[in-house]
Length: 347
Image (tube, rainbow, N blue to C red; front, top):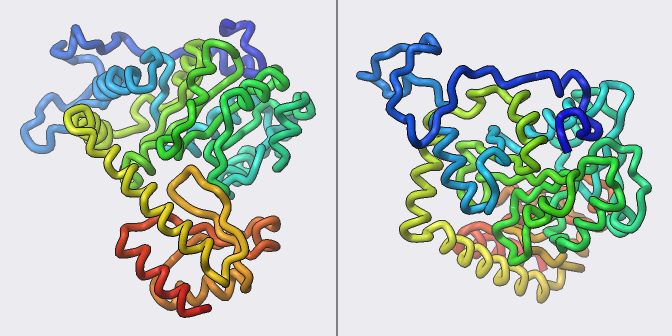
């Protein structure tokens, strides 16, 4: 698949080229830069240079972690930013459409509205994976684990979705994937041409306050996505910080210790909810939260928790309102104990 044959990428996008005079690599980190009108003196803040070389270091570090080539990765501030650019790259405003498979964050839907792109919300993942019902959609977005249920898709299910909807880009949002023991959709990139995988450093990596995400795709599409992404969309400080985290991970794997702690606390909360008389159902989750269906009015429980200075996610989606659902993130052991005590008082 090349620039000229790549399906459903607008012709105007194919003509965009990344404007740079020189590529920073590991071999030329010490080159004298007189090309970008930067302040040459770094005596005060040490942020006088544009962050291009930090992007290269970031890609070199994490391409090994994700088992892809550096040029298959595009760095951005958030998954939402990636989605916006993917939608605009592929869809003509007011003409083309996209599909969200499964319940999605309202923020994602708002992006389609902002771009004036019509969309379909469909919860029937089994239908999407078994037919080409949505082949008219330029993009189909899936989250695994799902942002509300915590459900994770198997790679054979994702592969079926890609093959049965080969005229659409399949975007798999794996923002919360590190909490699972599943196989990533990244492993399918050699088998299909219409797959894009999104990863975030906000959750498992503990950098929600920094804001970095990556898109991983075939090199041809990743290059086009890079071409429409501002060169310096992520600042030097953020890239330097994540590089520090990567080095810490390499030495001690500290960040993976938090995964064990989160899963332990998730199982503790799940055990409590399953035995609580005010709970109707706990949805199986492979993420860092639980979707809980209550026997009582969920809005009332939400307000009671809020009065006790506990904020959970109220699910406004009709299917969850009907089931009196609240999405509850896994907190620290102390946080979770306080939550349990409050909920026990409601029985």
